[in-house]
Structures are given as structure tokens and as C-alpha cells.
Length: 151
Length: 151
DNA sequence: ACAAGACGGTTCGAATTTGAACAACCGCGT
DNA sequence: ACGCGGTTGTTCAAATTCGAACCGTCTTGT
Image (cartoon, rainbow over all chains, first blue to last red):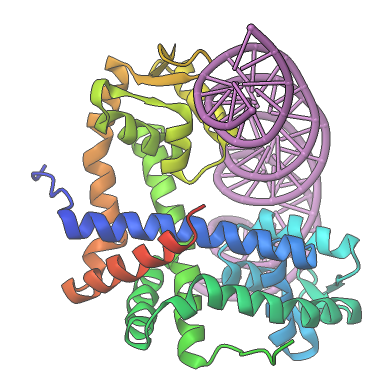
């Protein structure tokens, strides 16, 4: 096996920066959403996807893919949201196996009221910290990184 | 309250890229370490910190800070590592309350054998996917992001 | 039409994470 | 010397996460 190519100083800085940034940003947003809207980030993202979809309904599997979470994790979170009345389950008309998660009126209201605070937090933690040129590099480069690891 | 400044397309791309990249990279490395070395990423990072420290020992609190994890989370992971004999606990000489986590010989061996594979995975998932100029931007920008959220 | 395999979603158990509560201890200021 | 706020690390319960196993259903090849 080939000699290990260790990380040089710049690479190490990027890697460590990535680790710290992801950890802190994630924790920060998690907390903001929990405090302001009583939602986990995962739950908020589910609501967003449903809110963007026609009729506010999306297949479970499709949701799981977009959310970078496991199927069972999604089942759990949707159940939580269902308990709170923010989401409803409906069986899929074209596939008996399928299940559609549907945004309820209350869910849409919750989303609407949570969104501004969340966007503000995202800006404060990440977006507004970056210069425009950095923003572009980030979108390009991280987009590539994520895409390469897609299943 | 001011009008919400929503994210424009570029900002959204950066934010989404960030979310997907962090999620996929994290999952990928978690899996690689678990498969190849039987360690979680958190555990691996603990070993690394201890390996870099003089005498291979570090105070619990200091470890927790560097690891972006909660105190209780660290207690748990160190206990796990202790069960496997990779780490030992030693009470701090200068502070009765304090506890030092100490890397055992076996821990050091495990770290040594896990490191090459992990570095390779980090390269494959992130570092080698970035051009040199992107790498620099990433280090700079994400470093700033992380630092701003430091307690 | 039919068998084989892929798919969709849930359930289960195990592992992990978090914050709050706790008990013991440090050290500064008086 | 003393008291009091701040630290240190652990424990606890609750929430979350994951993967593997599972069952019913779709779909593809023949």
C-alpha cells in the first residue's frame, strides 16, 4: 500500500475549520429553532420540504433522500410532527406501499412563523460571515463535495 | 421588527451545499472509522488529541472544549474507550476535582493503525475534491465562521 | 402469467447525545 | 480564616439516531 499522504498545514486548517464550523453552526441552529419554535432542525427541514412541494405533500422516501437522513429516522420525526398536528400521513394513491407526508394548516402556520427567525440565524451564523466571493466558492466547492458522496 | 432578508439563489446554494456536504462527509467518515478501526469519529478525535498532548494526557474539560462536545458526552465516550483499554483515567495531581484522560500503549497503537485510513478518507471525501485556491478560502472562511461561534 | 428481486415504510434494540441536577472542590476577596 | 461564586466531572432521564430485520407490494425478465 502506498505511503500515507498526511495533511499539510493548509489542508489541516481547512479540515479543522470544516469540523469546527459544522459542529458549531449545527449546534447553534439546533438551539435557535428549539428555543424559538420548539422544533429540531430535522423537523424544520421536513416542514420546509413539504411547504415547497405542490399540495404540501411528499413521499416518505423522497423526503428522506432530500434530508440526508435514514428512513427510520424520518419515520420517527414524521411521527413526532404528526403528534403535534403539524403533519398528517396519507396513503399514496398510486402505490399501496407508499405514504405521503402532508403539511397541515397548523404545520404551515408553524413554518411561516419559524422561518424568519431561522433565516436570520443562518445569516448570522454563516451567510453574512462570508464575503460574496467566498460565498460563491463555498457553493461551488461544497456542492461538488456533497454531490460526490451522493448514493 | 425588520423585514426578513430571505436568502437569494447564491446564498441558498451555499447554505444547501454546506448542509449536504457536512451531512454526507460526516456520515462517510463515521462509517469508514467504524468499519476499519471500530471507532466512532468522536472516539477517534479523542485519541488524536491525547496523542498530540505531552505524555498523552489531557484534562477532561480541555478535551471537551477542543472536541465541540458536551461534558457529559465526553464522559460517556471516554468511558467507552476505557472499557476497551485505549484510554485510562488518572486523577489530576494539582486539582482533586480534575481527571486526566491518558492514552494507553494500546490506544496509541490503535491510533497509529487507524490514522492512515482515516486521512485517506478525509482526502477522498473533502480535501482532494477541492482545488488549492478553494482550500485556502475554505480554511479562511470556515475558520472565521467557527471562531465567531466559540463560547 | 409468474417467479425473483427490488422497493417502501415501519418496528425493534442498541448506541449515542444532550441538558439539568448534583456533589465535591478551588480560590478570590474580605 | 471564611464564605461564596464558579469549576469539575459524573449521573440521570429523555430524545434521537442508526442499521438490521421484516412484511407487503411493485416490477422486471422470461
